[in-house]
Length: 408
Image (tube, rainbow, N blue to C red; front, top):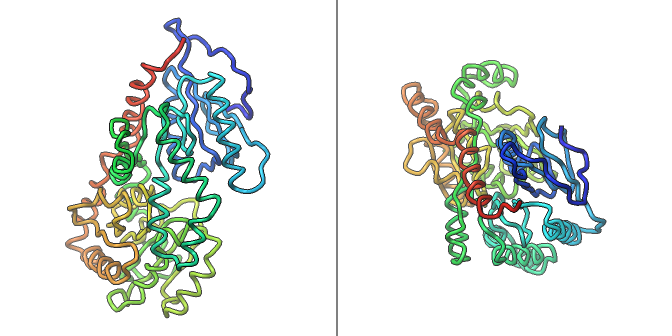
């Protein structure tokens, strides 16, 4: 079981069977929620490392949920703070003190903290997100974004981290992120490593349709012939719910129903938008769901016209379950469906393109003859991204880095 609180003072690591100290690895994530995408990546990494001669400590400011059964440790590090800037600055300074104390051989951060050995850019590049978000803002809101203390701090912390001479490697979970970083920081090119997220191909599979479609549609009062578009994701604004609702109001999707899964404090605003657009009767706000597999089995297509997303797990899970995908050109999942029949890529804010793209996918998904090949193509798009494959790639990178930084 993970320790509730690990000691702050350095302590010797137990010896391995080879008579050497175990490699001491820290993984840094400020707020740990096991249901989040980045957190699930951390869980899988920890599970993969559990069988190897590596002593893992998870450094987190907050912990939600129960630690997994494993041999790694949890170190809570939550300095006093007021506000987001002080919170992030204080956590970064605490992590930097741990690095300076020499307690760990390798520090992998999922936060923008200068001085770490390895950074996983699972949230992408903050500077790129702000540029894309500015497309949706009024002039006044763009000005507020530019002068926001938290955004300014985050941009400065991100830049300092990528320019830090201690940074040995950056894990990019899509080519989109890798190419963006290579353009912004040419000196980083040799340290950028493409490592896609893994997807649980046992849980998300082509059998979900047979297992759940009829039962869930009957429970929701939806006929077998009703075309259903599924969306899964929190953060409705960033992930494209508004243009998705606008697309649903267009003639191409007049017969379709939209299921929205996710928790968002701004949901009432999107409910009002659906009312204004005249589509409220065809939209179901289903809230957060602990298990999305029944909905993946019951839907016809998956839509995620996100404004910015390095590689959303929800899109991978939908493809693995056989659902064709519509996403945006600013989403890393777009590169997985390029050239395939199972996907459409469009601009995140183009409601017309979203509507026509979804209509195209629905036509194939509701065609009994075309459906088997479409579903097989969707699954094939992610069939190489198994959890064992991800773990093997992750461990290979660790071995390469730890072979040069391990100190007895």
